[in-house]
Amino acid sequence: MAAHALPRTLVVLALAGAVAATAAVPATAAPPTASHHPPHSATQDALHVITRTGTPGALARVDRPNEVWHGTSGVADLRTGRPRLPQDRFRAGSLAKPFIATVLLQLTAEPEYGLTLDDTVDKWLPGLVRGNANDGSRITLRQLLQHTSGLYDYIDDPGFRAKFTGDAFFAHRYEGATPEELVRVGLAHEPDFKPGREWSYSNTNYILAGMVIEKATGNSYASEVERRIIKPLGLRGTSLPGTSSTVPGPHGRHYSKLFVDGPAARFHDVTDFNPSVSGASGEIISTTRDLNVFIRALLRGELLPPAQQKEMFTGRDLGDGRSYGLGIRSQTLKACGVKVWGHSGDTFGSSTRTAATADGEHVITLNRNSEWGDHALEQAAIEAEFCGSRHR
Image 1 (tube, one colour):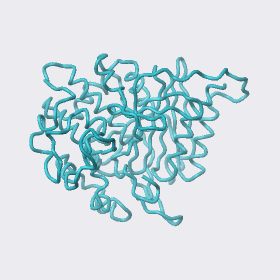
Image 2: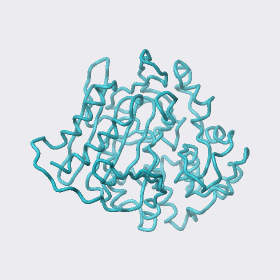
Image 3: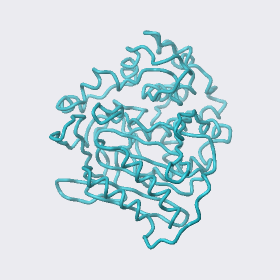
Image 4: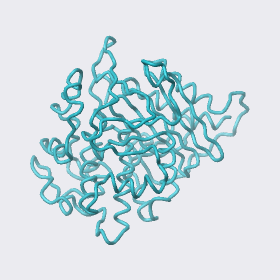
């Protein structure tokens, strides 16, 4: 959503980018040319641009074969001046979506759960999606994961937005919400289109996906993510905090203008709030290291059997070199033709982007401790890393 409106990533609901992909090989690179610039200098310069334009601090990590690079700019804490650290935890918003999609796809590969992508929402959550022309008997689990259900995005609800805009945030920051309450907000509106007809990013889809995981397994979606992904991959800085309002240390502060426009708009420390208002759609906390490890394992087929891997990376074409699969996006970078996979996530005071080549050999995660401003600057950092590195 444009800067003049409340971003669809409102709360930790993260508007994650929205595009993902079918497996493809990155475009052929131009012949390398001699360069006197140090490795990742273009990426570091892009981080400095982000902080010069208003974000307090930016942090990035790049993983390549036999190489790890950390880049920082600005500060983690405006009060103390503490710099950003490679091990900092941060709210990663909609980067929860590929975790949730991976778990649901794993369940479809395990016969004991009797779950398929073509199951309807009604099969697992009977009678829940009803009213205002919404019909769970016509929406499949695949459509939830790919944002083709047509369900209204609950964070676009004017009443919901109003609770977290400006000073209202401080009255509501610790309230939280149940998944059922969030779904009801979305269902108070007519669908945007009939299921399968179009594509529209909706956090309501992933609230429902989390509920399906719980119905199928008898466990919380958070515990399934932990058991199936976080622990096996050793993601020690990653958690789904539920209703806990704090970020585990070490962490910097998260700053937001609370979606108030204008040059006089002040920013506030919004590090603490109840992330259950985003639930399975975006409550996750993580680190640059953990997100790189996760996306690399996912791309290398270490988390899903081949059939489910193919499903996840079969993308719906969104035009302009973008597509969206099941909880993961792809984009062909205009500067050099490289196709990258990943996701992005915005929430109060935090904006994160993870992108990787198809083979998982080159991965970057970028975080800035604000969500306002021009997201094209994050795109510029991604282009700098993947396209700048082709000429070093």
